[in-house]
Length: 290
Image 1: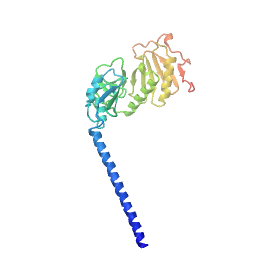
Image 2: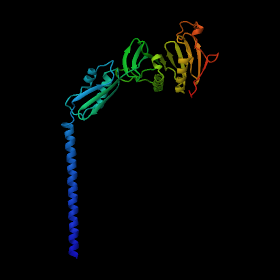
Image 3: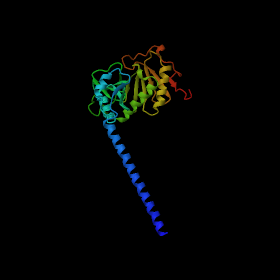
Image 4: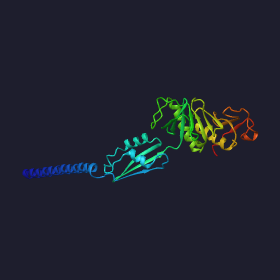
């Protein structure tokens, strides 16, 4: 009985060793296949055979983008330095606002680009720094084009460089500028804004169509103030009226007629004065339920 028991134990040990050797061999084989596959993927397979550019282009051409990207046909797709290419395109081609380089197996590269839509002219002394709505520096000029929104009150922290983000001293003003532009764009009002002044965080202001001065005050309740601004500009302001809307108090708007540039203090004709709900020039905020 003892011998029989020893033989059974020995048989079990042999089977256990055999299974262990098989597992080790299988693990080694899987690792070998993985290593060979990785080596082949980075050397033989997935070579680049096609590069395409996607996006609406007006300021730059597809050829310019491809030249800056400098992607070599036949090079390995998986080893493509996508982030580096994105940065090169963004820095070199000034009117490119967003760029995304995508790898598509087995050998295609897609370069997705978006050009800047809104141009801002940031006043800097007697010159203007032309930037995108994301503050990418596009140019430095002596004059601002009529199509640009003039921005006052942003002080560069260092010398602006084309193709790089404008660095300023006051991030709070930058935040307001981005927020107010986004809200105005949602209301389809941004195209008619000719100036944004962020000099004083207690007295932010806008100019609409170069004839209506809009006092925003602080950034508090900004969404409510822009809702109110939409209401008074579209429904309570005559097409040729000139003057000032004071929206610094949320849910209230007061109008004062007059030339906002100070060239002529003579008030406009009665027909030019916006129709008001009250005799004192006070307009009520739109109801939230409307």
